Length: 242
Ligand SMILES: [Zn+2]
Ligand SMILES: [Zn+2]
Image 1 (cartoon, helix red, strand yellow):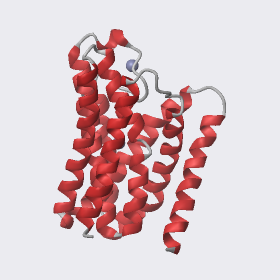
Image 2 (cartoon, helix red, strand yellow):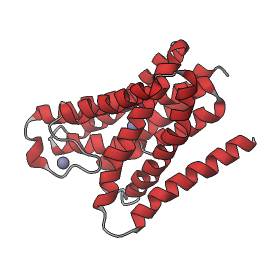
Image 3 (cartoon, helix red, strand yellow):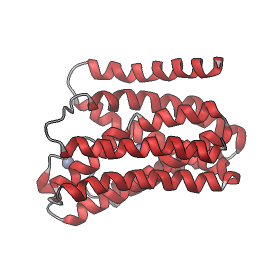
Image 4 (cartoon, protein in one colour):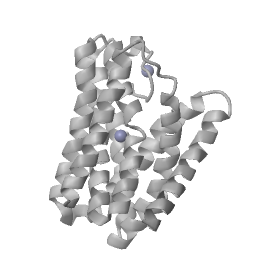
C-alpha cells in the first residue's frame, strides 16, 4: 500500500474515534469515567512521541525545524485560546460562558485547526516510515475520543441540539482526514509538516490535556501520564523489532 493509502486508512480510524467520542455525550447512559484515562495516557504518549521521535526526525530533515515546532505550538494557542474566548478539554459545564453562540463556534474552529494537524502528523509519519506512522497514529487516536466528547459537549452546552453536536464531532474527523490528504499529496513538504505537527502535539498534550489531568485529585491519573510514556517506549521497542 502507498503511504497515502495507509495514512487514509489510519486517518479514517482516528476520524471514527472523534465521532464515537461525540456519541458518548449524546448517549447519556453510556459510561464516560474512563475518558480521563485517555487524557492522561494520551498526554504522556504524545509528549514522548513529540520529544523522542518527531523533533529528532524533523532535525534530520530540516536544520531550522525548531522554528516550525514553535510555530505549530503558537498556531494552536492562537486558534484554541486566542480567537476562542472559552475553550478547554473535557465536559463543558460552564453553560453561562456559552450563552453567546459565537463562543461555541470559535471553540469548534480552534479544534478543527488542531485536528487538521493531527492528520498532517499521521501522514508525515507514514511518508517517512511505517513505524513512525503507527506511533503518530497512536499519539493521535489516544486523544480522539476526548476530543469528540469535548466538542459535542460544548455544542450541547450552547443549546445546539444532539444532531449538531454529533455533526461537530464528525467535522473534527473530516478535518483530520483533510490534513492526511493535504500532507499525503504534498510529500515534498514533509520537512515542514512534521515539525509543525510536533508543535501542535506538544500544545495538545501539555497545554490542553495536562491541565485536565491535574484537575483530578489524587496521584492515580498523574501516574497514568508516566504510563503513557512507558506505553510509547514499549510500542517503539516492538515496532523496531519487527
Ligand atoms: Zn467550560
Ligand atoms: Zn487532536
